[in-house]
Amino acid sequence: MASSQVTPDALPGFTRLTPGVLLHNSSEPSSRSDSSPSLIILCTWVSASRRNIAKYTSHYQMLYPLASLLVIESTVKDMVFGTDNSQAKRFAPAREVILAHSNPGKPRSVLLHIFSNGGSQSAGRLLVSLPQQARQVMLRAIVLDSCPGKGTLDRSVEAMVVSLPRTWFFRVFGRLIVYLLCVFVMVMDEVFGVENVVTVAGRRLLDDELIPKHVPRAYLYSRTDKMVWCQDVKEHADQARQKGYAHVGDVMFEQGQHCAHIQKNGTEYWQAVNSVIRSGGTKI
Image (cartoon, rainbow, N blue to C red; front, side, top):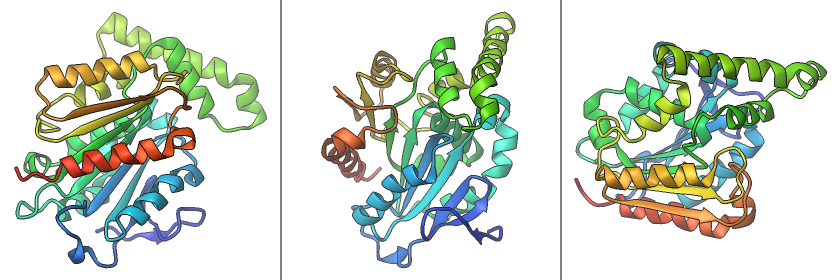
């Protein structure tokens, strides 16, 4: 594995593998039971603060203390300018970690927790970069938090504006810059037939070459989310059922902010996560 270094402002106990890829290794991975994941991958939302990411990693460490944690962060740059090839290079050490947990003798050892459209594009590109043999055996379950949405202009602008740095320049010019970037992407999509990154991410989450149909999934979303509409997430869940995915759960919270459902719905949220993990324990 590539050499790593302790992150200066990061999650406690994590090391940086490459920019935006962080790992917390379990001290006793061989002691894990078959009823729990050995690796939990969190593909975070665009420009998520590590303080907020820690709310999820710390809870997972409490639930599954023998599991390793792999955090893959997402940025506006990844969404607008990233490609499968460029991201595959960044994910190289992450792939080494994942493949070490993708033992055919102990299948279904990896939990994939995806947040928003930023996490969806990271997850899709990560899966594309993995060998098909690993994809067919490694996944225990998938959690989809506030995703996937649709890449409409207004919602894309709002999601990206929230993620901009809080400097005077971006306060004054940020929305205009984001608007022009999103218009450019939409024009490429409509005029030249180039799929935008959000559309690609949603499609990949329904591709059984990337995610086998036996892998259970849970969609967790909110009626009041202004960035990713509940109708879009519900539609994706219905499409997963129609495509033959065996175990598809969706939980819509009446209240809750984007990628912050645990603030008002913590008990129900983690119950849904635990439920989908347990349902993924059946042997292939």
